[in-house]
Amino acid sequence: MTISIIVAAAENNAIGKEGNLLWHLPNDMKFFKNTTWAMPVIMGRKTWESLGKPLQGRANIVISRQPDWKAEGAEVCANLFDAIEKARQLHTKEIFVIGGGQIYKESLTIAERIYITRVHARYDDADVFFDGVKWDEWQLVKAQDFAPDEKNKLPHTIEIWERKQG
Picture 1 (tube, helix red, strand yellow):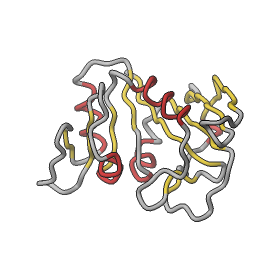
Picture 2: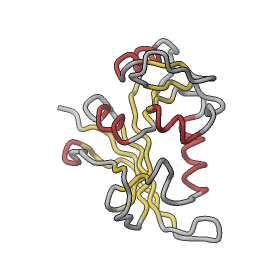
Picture 3: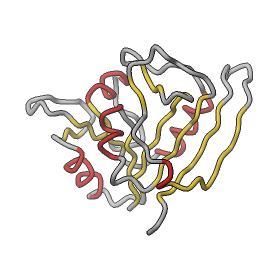
C-alpha cells in the first residue's frame, strides 16, 4: 500500500493563508478528486475544518490531539501513525495525506509518492507552506503543464514524484 502526499503549492511553497487555499484552479480540484477517489484521505483538524464537510467517495481520517474532538463523517485519530494504521485496514492501493502543513511535514519521512500541483506564482503573505522536502531523495516521473485559461487563471504544472530507491 502506497503512502502518498497530494498538495498544491506555489513556487515559494506557499499552500494556504488563514485556513484557505490561495488560488482557485478547477483543473487542480478535478485532478485531486480523480486521484483520491475511493481512497482514504488523512488530514489535520484545521484542514478538516476548512473543508467544512467530509470528502465524498473517500474514507476521511482526521488527526486531532484533542481526545474528545469529533468529526461527523470521519474517523478521528490522535496521530499520524494511528491514522495510517486506520487507513491500512481499508485495504486500498494508496493512502493520501492531504494536509495541512504540519501533517505534510510529519508524513515526509514515510511517504513514497508526492503528487504536487506547482502553481506558477508566489504568495509571500501565506501562513502555511509545503516545505522540508529533500528533493534530491525524489525522482520526477511525470509532469504536465497547463497554461492559464478562462477557468484556471494561473499557469501550473501537475507533477508526480517517487521516492528514490536505495
